[in-house]
Image 1 (cartoon, rainbow, N blue to C red):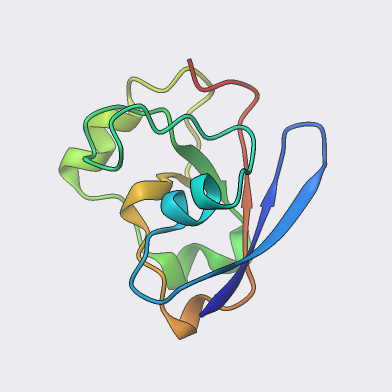
Image 2: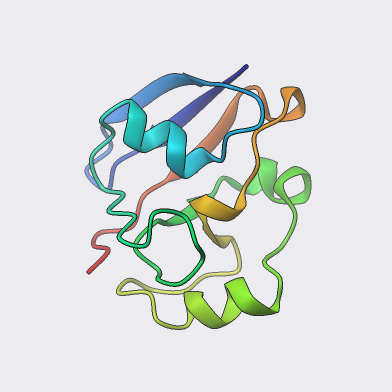
Length: 107
């Protein structure tokens, strides 16, 4: 289990426990975190679970692969170096304390 903090665009923070083996998108959806739409349900076929990984966590979460990077090109908000699809970040004990910021819009 890892504590993940999702920070909405307006600064509202949601700290939730996300089970190991889930992805951070599932953690947000199951805990009612607003700002992640997840229209494809985690299949990496949309960009509606776009997040900005806090700079301190970029190395730990890794970088987007080719498929994810292609989907990020379709994101409604600005693409940044720390942009990821939350459905592609697998939760492990190593991610305990992860901080993610949500973009202004997903659609």
